[in-house]
Image (cartoon, rainbow, N blue to C red):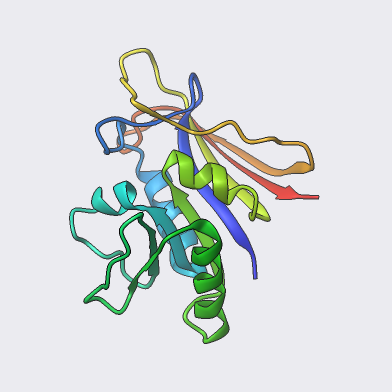
Length: 173
Protein backbone atom coordinates (compact mmCIF):
# COMPACT_ATOMS: atom_id res chain seq x y z
CA UNK A 1 0.00 0.00 0.00
CA UNK A 2 1.23 3.48 -0.89
CA UNK A 3 0.34 6.86 0.48
CA UNK A 4 0.40 9.46 -2.28
CA UNK A 5 0.22 13.24 -2.38
CA UNK A 6 -1.53 14.27 -5.59
CA UNK A 7 -1.85 17.90 -6.61
CA UNK A 8 -1.66 20.43 -9.40
CA UNK A 9 -0.01 23.82 -9.10
CA UNK A 10 1.08 26.79 -11.14
CA UNK A 11 4.70 26.40 -12.11
CA UNK A 12 5.24 30.14 -11.54
CA UNK A 13 4.25 30.48 -7.88
CA UNK A 14 2.81 27.12 -6.77
CA UNK A 15 -0.72 28.56 -6.85
CA UNK A 16 -3.40 25.88 -6.54
CA UNK A 17 -6.70 27.69 -6.31
CA UNK A 18 -8.77 30.82 -6.08
CA UNK A 19 -11.91 31.15 -3.94
CA UNK A 20 -11.95 27.37 -3.41
CA UNK A 21 -11.98 26.56 -7.13
CA UNK A 22 -9.42 25.51 -9.72
CA UNK A 23 -8.36 28.59 -11.71
CA UNK A 24 -7.67 26.76 -14.99
CA UNK A 25 -9.13 24.27 -17.40
CA UNK A 26 -6.75 21.32 -17.76
CA UNK A 27 -8.66 18.23 -18.88
CA UNK A 28 -5.52 16.09 -18.95
CA UNK A 29 -4.81 16.87 -15.31
CA UNK A 30 -8.40 16.16 -14.28
CA UNK A 31 -8.30 12.86 -16.19
CA UNK A 32 -5.03 11.93 -14.50
CA UNK A 33 -6.46 12.83 -11.09
CA UNK A 34 -9.59 10.76 -11.73
CA UNK A 35 -7.69 7.71 -12.99
CA UNK A 36 -5.14 7.69 -10.16
CA UNK A 37 -7.56 8.38 -7.32
CA UNK A 38 -10.15 5.90 -8.59
CA UNK A 39 -7.42 3.28 -8.76
CA UNK A 40 -6.13 4.19 -5.28
CA UNK A 41 -9.67 4.11 -3.93
CA UNK A 42 -9.19 6.13 -0.72
CA UNK A 43 -8.77 9.92 -0.76
CA UNK A 44 -7.98 12.22 2.16
CA UNK A 45 -8.85 15.91 1.99
CA UNK A 46 -9.55 18.95 4.09
CA UNK A 47 -13.07 20.21 4.67
CA UNK A 48 -12.69 23.12 2.22
CA UNK A 49 -11.58 20.76 -0.55
CA UNK A 50 -14.59 18.57 0.18
CA UNK A 51 -16.89 21.62 0.17
CA UNK A 52 -15.50 22.58 -3.25
CA UNK A 53 -17.22 19.44 -4.61
CA UNK A 54 -20.57 21.13 -3.81
CA UNK A 55 -22.05 18.02 -2.20
CA UNK A 56 -20.85 15.67 -4.93
CA UNK A 57 -19.13 12.48 -3.77
CA UNK A 58 -16.57 11.33 -6.32
CA UNK A 59 -17.43 7.88 -7.70
CA UNK A 60 -15.44 4.77 -6.77
CA UNK A 61 -13.60 6.46 -3.90
CA UNK A 62 -13.82 6.53 -0.12
CA UNK A 63 -13.59 10.17 1.05
CA UNK A 64 -11.88 10.82 4.37
CA UNK A 65 -12.49 14.43 5.31
CA UNK A 66 -10.42 16.25 7.92
CA UNK A 67 -12.57 18.51 10.07
CA UNK A 68 -12.22 20.22 13.44
CA UNK A 69 -15.89 19.51 14.03
CA UNK A 70 -16.40 15.75 13.90
CA UNK A 71 -19.49 14.88 11.93
CA UNK A 72 -21.45 11.79 11.06
CA UNK A 73 -21.99 11.21 7.38
CA UNK A 74 -25.14 9.88 5.77
CA UNK A 75 -23.02 8.62 2.85
CA UNK A 76 -21.11 5.38 3.44
CA UNK A 77 -18.26 6.66 1.22
CA UNK A 78 -17.67 9.78 3.37
CA UNK A 79 -15.81 9.42 6.68
CA UNK A 80 -14.71 12.27 8.93
CA UNK A 81 -11.44 12.39 10.89
CA UNK A 82 -10.17 14.99 13.33
CA UNK A 83 -6.47 14.81 12.39
CA UNK A 84 -4.10 13.39 9.78
CA UNK A 85 -2.97 10.44 11.90
CA UNK A 86 -6.58 9.35 12.37
CA UNK A 87 -7.29 9.88 8.66
CA UNK A 88 -4.31 7.71 7.68
CA UNK A 89 -5.42 4.97 10.09
CA UNK A 90 -8.97 5.05 8.72
CA UNK A 91 -7.54 4.95 5.19
CA UNK A 92 -5.40 1.92 6.03
CA UNK A 93 -8.46 0.24 7.53
CA UNK A 94 -10.41 0.84 4.30
CA UNK A 95 -7.54 -0.65 2.27
CA UNK A 96 -7.32 -3.65 4.61
CA UNK A 97 -11.00 -4.49 4.02
CA UNK A 98 -10.68 -4.13 0.25
CA UNK A 99 -12.24 -0.67 -0.18
CA UNK A 100 -9.10 0.60 -1.91
CA UNK A 101 -5.54 -0.21 -2.90
CA UNK A 102 -3.74 2.95 -1.79
CA UNK A 103 -4.35 6.30 -0.12
CA UNK A 104 -4.23 9.59 -2.05
CA UNK A 105 -4.00 12.89 -0.17
CA UNK A 106 -5.68 15.45 -2.43
CA UNK A 107 -5.42 18.77 -0.54
CA UNK A 108 -5.67 21.57 0.37
CA UNK A 109 -2.36 23.16 1.30
CA UNK A 110 -2.29 22.31 5.02
CA UNK A 111 -3.42 18.75 4.34
CA UNK A 112 -0.71 18.28 1.70
CA UNK A 113 1.92 19.69 4.07
CA UNK A 114 0.99 17.40 6.94
CA UNK A 115 0.37 14.47 4.61
CA UNK A 116 3.86 14.79 3.13
CA UNK A 117 5.20 13.38 6.41
CA UNK A 118 3.35 10.12 5.68
CA UNK A 119 3.64 9.97 1.88
CA UNK A 120 5.68 7.52 -0.18
CA UNK A 121 4.84 9.11 -3.56
CA UNK A 122 4.36 12.65 -4.87
CA UNK A 123 2.23 12.87 -8.02
CA UNK A 124 2.38 16.49 -9.14
CA UNK A 125 1.18 18.47 -12.11
CA UNK A 126 2.95 21.71 -12.93
CA UNK A 127 0.68 24.01 -14.94
CA UNK A 128 2.61 26.66 -16.87
CA UNK A 129 0.18 29.49 -16.14
CA UNK A 130 0.70 33.14 -16.96
CA UNK A 131 0.23 36.27 -14.86
CA UNK A 132 -3.49 36.48 -15.74
CA UNK A 133 -4.37 33.79 -13.20
CA UNK A 134 -5.09 34.89 -9.63
CA UNK A 135 -4.44 32.63 -6.63
CA UNK A 136 -5.28 32.73 -2.96
CA UNK A 137 -4.14 29.17 -2.12
CA UNK A 138 -0.67 27.74 -2.70
CA UNK A 139 1.01 24.36 -2.65
CA UNK A 140 3.10 24.13 0.53
CA UNK A 141 6.87 23.96 0.72
CA UNK A 142 7.81 20.31 1.08
CA UNK A 143 11.30 19.26 2.08
CA UNK A 144 12.43 17.30 -0.98
CA UNK A 145 15.41 15.76 0.81
CA UNK A 146 15.08 12.01 0.34
CA UNK A 147 12.75 12.28 -2.66
CA UNK A 148 13.76 11.11 -6.14
CA UNK A 149 12.15 12.16 -9.41
CA UNK A 150 11.21 8.99 -11.30
CA UNK A 151 9.07 10.28 -14.18
CA UNK A 152 8.49 13.56 -16.03
CA UNK A 153 6.20 14.12 -19.01
CA UNK A 154 5.78 17.47 -20.80
CA UNK A 155 2.75 18.51 -22.85
CA UNK A 156 1.61 21.54 -24.83
CA UNK A 157 -1.69 23.35 -24.39
CA UNK A 158 -4.53 22.41 -26.73
CA UNK A 159 -8.28 22.86 -27.08
CA UNK A 160 -9.02 21.26 -23.69
CA UNK A 161 -5.91 22.33 -21.76
CA UNK A 162 -5.46 26.07 -21.25
CA UNK A 163 -1.72 25.90 -20.55
CA UNK A 164 1.40 23.84 -21.23
CA UNK A 165 1.96 21.41 -18.36
CA UNK A 166 4.15 18.70 -16.90
CA UNK A 167 3.32 15.57 -14.93
CA UNK A 168 6.09 14.71 -12.47
CA UNK A 169 6.30 11.74 -10.11
CA UNK A 170 8.63 11.44 -7.12
CA UNK A 171 9.22 8.54 -4.74
CA UNK A 172 10.67 8.62 -1.26
CA UNK A 173 14.10 6.98 -1.27
